[in-house]
Image (cartoon, rainbow, N blue to C red; front, side, top):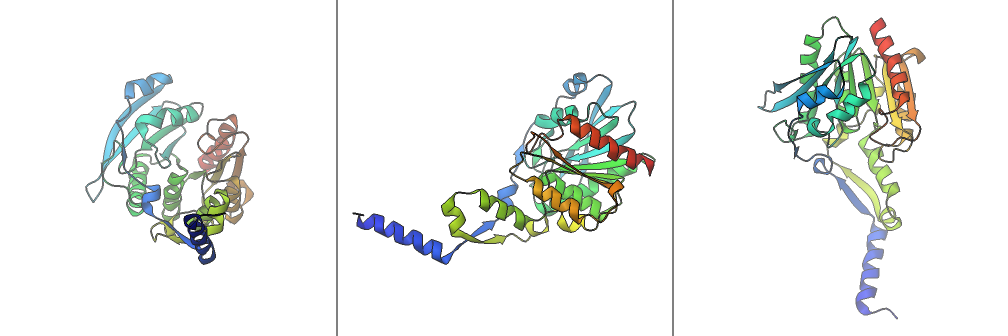
Length: 288
C-alpha cells in the first residue's frame, strides 16, 4: 500500500503529464564562456612538415578580441576558414582540424569564438554571427584571386551558414548541421526517457536561437556545398543533413551529401571519405 507522501508524488506527476510541461531552450544551454590557452604554434607546425603557423587577432566594434591561427603550405590551392562547434578551442582542438586537412592542398584559418579559447568577450548568438561575417571579410580581403571555402561544424555550421547567406562564397562545408532549433529540441526530447517524453509537450525557444539552424539558408544557397555527417551522430543525426541537402536548390554538380560510415558527431572529417568529397568541392570551387 502506498504511503500518503508516495501517493502525493504520483498525483503530482500525473498532473504534470496531463498538463504538459514546457521546456525552455535558452542561449545559456548552448553557449557559455570556455577560456583556454592559445595553441603552441611551434608544436602545431612541427606535427606536419611543410606548414608554417602564425597567430593574430581581429578586433570587433564592441571591443572583443578574436584569436586567429593561420596554417599555410606552399602548394595550397585554396583557403579554408573553419568555425568550430560548441566547446571548440584552438589550443585544444586545432591539431584535430590540422589532421583532417593534412592531406589536402589548402591553407587553414581557425578562430576561437568570442568567450572561448584565447578570444575575449562573452558568447552570444548575435555576437558570434557578427564575428563570423567580420572574420570572413578580413580573410576574403587577404585571399583575393584564390578560392575561399567556409567550413562550419555543429554550432559553427550555423555561423558558416549565416556567412553563406550574406556573402557569395566559393564553397561551403556544413558538418553535423541542423535544420532548425525546434527540430533539434524535438530530437533531444525523442532521445530522452519515457517520462520526459510524456511530460514535455511544448518548447519555448529563445528568440536568438530561433535564428539558428540552416534550413532557410539551404533553400537560398547559390554556392557549391558539401553536407557532411557521421552515420552514428546522435546529436545532429544524418536525417537533418539529408533534409538540408534535399532543400538545396542547386544542380547535382554543386551539392554533395556525405554520410560517413562508423563516424559520430565530431570525427566525420577524420576519415578517407572526407578527403574524397572535399577534393570534389575544391575542384568545383577552383573551376569558378
